[in-house]
Amino acid sequence: MQATDPKGGDLVRRHHLFTRAWHWINLVAVTVMLMSGLMIFNAHPRLYWGHYGANAKGHPDQAWLDLGHLNGGVPFPPWITIPSHYSLADARLWHFAFAWVLGTALVLYLGWGLVRGHLRRDLAPRLAELAPAHLWHDIKQHARLRFPTGAAALRYNILQKLAYGSVLIVMLPVTVLTGLTMSPGLDAAFPWLIDLFGGRQSARSIHFLCTAGLAGFFLVHIAMVILAGPINELRSMLTGWYRLPQDREDQA
Image (cartoon, rainbow, N blue to C red; front, top):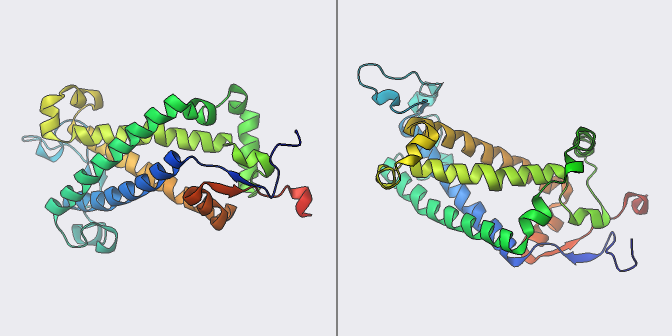
């Protein structure tokens, strides 16, 4: 390490303005879409594979997930839905409005990340990082709450790369595409969407599973922020400035 390299205790720039703006826009959009999506799900709390689901003439498809027996047929309570009263029409308005926000922000961020090299430089895993021994080491370090310190804290570890990559490259794009597939108007313009996901009901199921994955990521992300030091982490995402954690030998 050269003398000019940052070390534990230094205040450094961590997140670009574009990254910080996308983070907060994404947080608002996903939260509103999740809560309004739960209201939409309450209208028919069952999921199917294929094209027709319960609308199959004469032979309705068997639901692979049926939550209709919970809470009097309304599985998600009002405090977690938008709106808080039952209204499928209002929930769709909220959901579709913020879907455009989410989709536009995602396209802009991915385009910026490709042009600036952020995706390749910071999020693409190296072959050595994918080695089972390296993965297992990082899993054990996280389980022991031994997070990177000093200049190493500026780089994403392999677990972060895999988590953020799965969100950016898989879950968010698939969520947007399956959402488009459930729109009859867009199906008429882009009929290949239905074939891509094996039917509108399959698209709805995949949409639900990706949303559940995003919710799980969100909960783990919040837990990691709290464990790593919420004030420092929030400051870095609000202002871009981050204080590097002290090396463990310096803390002893």
